[in-house]
Length: 255
Image (tube, rainbow, N blue to C red; front, side, top):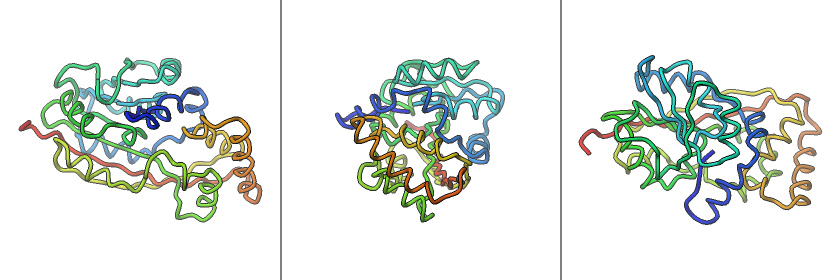
């Protein structure tokens, strides 16, 4: 989860993620090789302190925690923080935002942002992230996206109105966005994985989408019915394919 800084983005970014428990239960985890990619690229180990910024309910935090020495989480949504505390042990979670991180200068070896950077005020956030990173520290961004190269997933996205209502453009070159900030050696990478989901889990997953949570009940029910019609002709459970996009970069030490 994360936050926006224009009116519509802030409403989607905060109000649209008020169901922390459901979000944590149905949102996909990240492929292990993508998590290990961060550990390898940033040379993280048992001595490393990592910030999970826009940590949501702790999905990515819990995957990263066994691989590093310490994780601190920052998340602006009270509902997400409540779920985080219930589901995640051994990690401090703080109320903060992308442009106001409640950490001192040079505090962490790396900052990771899972499924959240698209909500950030990028130019300001990148400077704030640079502030809390130790010189030469790493920044890692990661997103799970349904694989729209698969025909039935395209149909699902259409039923969800994703093609017209999606809150962010997954085609944005975030490597270029990061490179415009105080970072160097910016590299994208891509991973693939699948997740086994019952039809009911797919419907629940759909209802955690930010703009769908904000719909009037009748509109949301009609959309879920459209999703059900897409699923009706498919096996139960389904194999949901994902593309996981990753960006890594290093803080420029000369700033």
